[in-house]
Image (cartoon, rainbow, N blue to C red; front, side, top):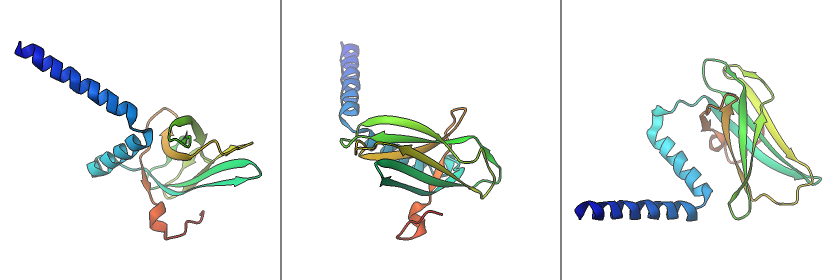
Length: 155
């Protein structure tokens, strides 16, 4: 009898957790994951610094541009930016892998990526970026945009 009660409680907790995962927006999970990574501190070795991330709408073209720097002592090869695009309601609509302008990024060297959408009609509400190597490994980064002062200008 006690075993059945314990199993019922466990099943109720699993159902409740699943329900919570359905109603909480993806952006909230992304922020929570990033907070966990920051709390773990030195456990994750950052390889690049995100220096600039910005967008522009011009002539019905939506452009996202970013600049990264290799902060390791070794070259980094074949890094792509994974750009997630969200609708106005916060739901994920699309993910694009965008190549850097350099195949190999030497230590302390910068690289740039750019994504352009022609015929843009305000279908995206926000976006986020992560980095991966072409073999699928995550490239952890340090967000250095806030340390550049009040106005961010592209390098």
